[in-house]
Image (cartoon, rainbow, N blue to C red; front, side, top):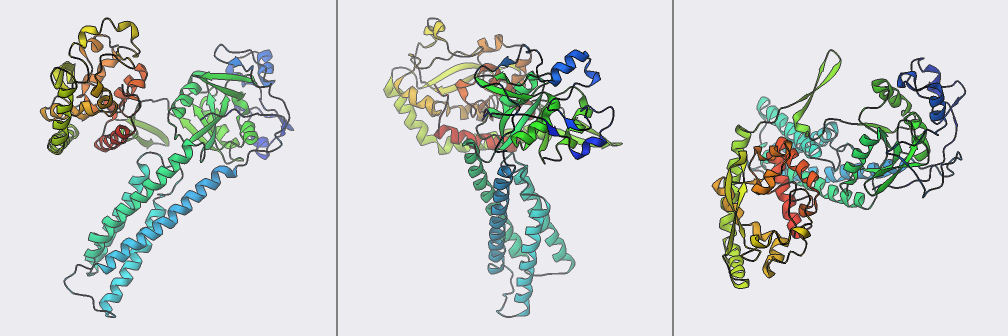
Amino acid sequence: MVRVPVLRLGKVAAHKGAAHASAGSAFPVKPAVADVNPPASPWIGKSAAAQRTEKAGLAALRSDVTLDLVLPPVTHRRLRNKAPHKDRLTWTRFLTNSLRLADTALVASAVFAGVVLNFDEMALAAGSPAQSKHLMMGLILGVVWLAALEVYRTRDPKVLGVGPEEYKRVLSASFRVFGFLGIVAVVFRLEAVSSFVLVSLPLGLVALTGSRWGFRRWLSHEKSRGRCLSRAIVVGEPQDVRYVIKQINRKSGAAYDILGACLPGARRGTVLAVDHLRVPVLSSIYGVAHTVRQTGANAVIVAGPVPGGNQFIQELGWRLEESAAELVLAATLTNVAGPRIHWRPVEGLPLMHVDIPHYSGGKHTLKRLMDIAVSAVALLVLAPVLLFLAAIVRADSPGPVLFKQERIGKQGTTFQMLKFRSMVVDAEAHLEALSSQDEGSGVLFKIRGDPRITRCGKWMRKYSLDELPQFWNVLMGNMSLVGPRPPLSREVSGYERHTHRRLLIKPGITGLWQINGRSDLPWDEAVRLDLYYVENWSIAGDLMIMWRTFRAMTRPSGAY
């Protein structure tokens, strides 16, 4: 979500730390007054006239930045109602406090269940010393469990509603507490611990992760409506800023509300075109701190390299201390998932290690075992459904029930992919005649309202029911449950060089392309998602994609 703010900038008194700025600072400072856009540092390589022009915010228009003809020019009057910084603090405080109360209630319930449901052979008589010791142990366990959830920062706003890190912290804190409980029980020969391990631990884990999922759903709903967002300004070169804003706006539940951009040598009152959006340019990169104070931004996102390099980023962090805004650095290393990235400090130098993707080994064996188990169970459980759909296809139009088509699999091998027939028998013969109506992107051929689709094929395609026979392909080893889209040979012949990396692993019944728009995806985005999956897949990620696929089938989009 991108909002277009009306920004009025002016001169402000220099902050207290200005006197301590070094002579070589990337942010030149005047003793009495700090201008919104200080002149460029000498290392930029600009002439003095160009520096004065940039200082005035009147730099020449860049080819990728256009003059805003919709909004009035930015004036130098202050905002009457300064955007409050408490907006983000309000919802984060509400969310963390609500989670804290929910965690307390759930942990107390799980421990109480462990106290009541005792599986030890010796019954705890009411009022006996053993029962008192058992109650005390439960009380200590509850306090330590809640303390661990606090110490492991399971309610950190930075991880709430984003990725699996929140769940990992909950699980890690819980397992460590019960591991410590087991050690204490062995050392001090404590009895009646099994009920806590067998009852409190599983019950607590299910309840805690379930509550986090519920809060995450609520937070995602609020963000999709433009609430509970961090107000952010993106800083950097136009192409980097454009990429970051595209990625943030790609998902409706993104964490940031983009207020505008700060570009090197930018002119106030201009806009940066990002797809169909017109993102206002708020200042040059040297007026970021002042712009943050004026707009009430909560975060500054540095998109890639900026003039001044590390010195600029370091001093920007110092200047943002007054406004308590976050400094976020967008990594230039794209399409690499978090688990492949490891930080290792060496002599004070933080080094980032990126694991090389592997296309064989134990993880792939585990994936194959999961494919066999799930596909076999699915074929048995869905057998009545498959027979019912087969009867419908047979009665709907003449021709075979199953449609067999040659597809390209792992390492370029071919196989016969199975689907319920959703088109007329001679559909391939009409392909050339319909080529002028092709709406697909890249090498894909797609037509909305394709006249070759049968009556039952329309709703079968909508809900992906025509793809159920592909469980047989998975069982036979030609496909996987999750993977890149299985391509046709004519599509592979039109691949660019890097696109062939999609063939390094088996194609899947579902994948990132399936849950991110399917046929509505642009070709380059579909390729990016497939390549991302090829290099970064995991078992946990596969389970998440399968769950999201089930949800996408109930609310189909881009299926035709």
